[in-house]
Length: 355
Image (cartoon, rainbow, N blue to C red):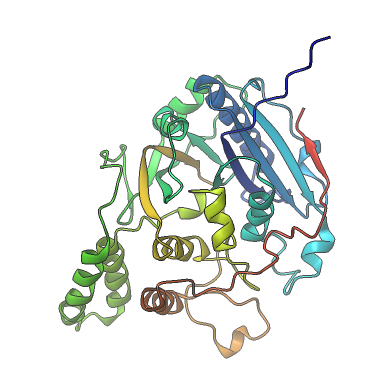
């Protein structure tokens, strides 16, 4: 009698959180496209991987409405169902029915691969990017990728090359290393690695008086100018970072996952990259891009909270963000709270394979 061989363990876990409330419109179409395209790419590049979808407190679980992707040889799809009671027990539950970084932490905690990529469900990865993901990854690095927003709404069941072509032909905005800009073509390729950062920090600090003087007559422009200069000198690619950040599973554990804030999660993704940097991880920008299918979205205000906002879920304003970045640089460590029970390892959530 021969012993049945065990399935190979995944090399990469891809984690995304979502809630079936039709956020942004055509939600189920977008998530089906994401699953189908990712499965096809995993097969094409022979990347043994798993997709961990965390359904955050949906009243109608989206796994019931999704179909298994046609290509399934190299990607397994797991759906973890977080019951509504979990969100109901959190502050501002009615105002914040979906907690993106709480959901991603649930997936990171339960990921099986040695490397974990956190992403979102309205994306298509290019072949160049998948080739980078299929290569050797480093435990002392965190990985980023550029994002291109597209106006297309590809058919989820179209062949992979048609989906990619539809995205490539409808780019409306580029999110790169410095800032987001409107474009009508893809950006130029950059070197995949960013140099050591110490001299960049010094240059940013030395430039501060001159930057302030240049904007003395335009004080409203100063916060953005300081932000752009700081990002440029430090070299961290924080734009659209919620859509793509990859770390070794051990690094996620050491950092205690994403901060789980009581209020809105705006700017959490970017601040987390500073925490990665000051934890000693080196940024690596992978070749290729992720295409993001544009949709309606809601954001909390960017201004500081006022008396009229009393009782609302708090958010990180732009001024709060600048102060957090400077505090992080001084402390060389985290400035946002990381829960000891991040990802809720104490709870046994229902899980099913998409088949």
